[in-house]
Image (cartoon, rainbow, N blue to C red):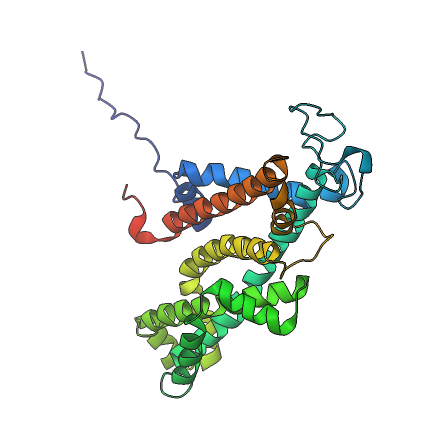
Length: 304
């Protein structure tokens, strides 16, 4: 009786390689804290975007008969004002939602206004080391001699308080960080073989800057932009608390803290709620930055 030939067990098909986006998302999701922070921040951003439609009241409308009313869970609370009212009878929930539009909007706008010129100046300093680099970096060193908030206060003093001037002041304070980071990252890439090959192939300076070098410098810039976003939220609140940022009656978290500081003992929610909102927002953005760093830095990726 002839023996049947043994057939080898079917081997499992090799898994398809992950795309760069899938690899990034997998690395980001490996950090549970960053993933939870992303969900919290997405909820805050969505609430801020939808504030005109989900806020129960106008943020500047005053209910004189309900001044300093406690939240719904406190003594004398009402479902009409879920988070209570402030010293002028304005709904706290509505002001927090609309204040998120201002604080998060200023943070995003200031990051973009400092990132774009900072990248350009950093690339110019890296590619023109003997001509432009000394002048650019000395100006950045002078700006770094002042803390970011103090520099923003100086700019606000010159330009005057207001929403647009707050964005400009915070952007100017963050500019040196982007310039120095871009220059350092670009200098590390300029000597690599692919840049030399592009130069030999006839690529011009602008093409080398933005097509060859800049894409390989984006990882640290993205992480720094995320962390700068949280700093911008804090600086916006700080300027508002000092009366140099967004002016009343516009709802902004720092301005809400400033106007409520005289009522800390009598009505602690008018101080606690804006403070907690700032804390949660900044913490969420910082944790997201840690997750981005882990996902984008190849040295921190796990070797399978």
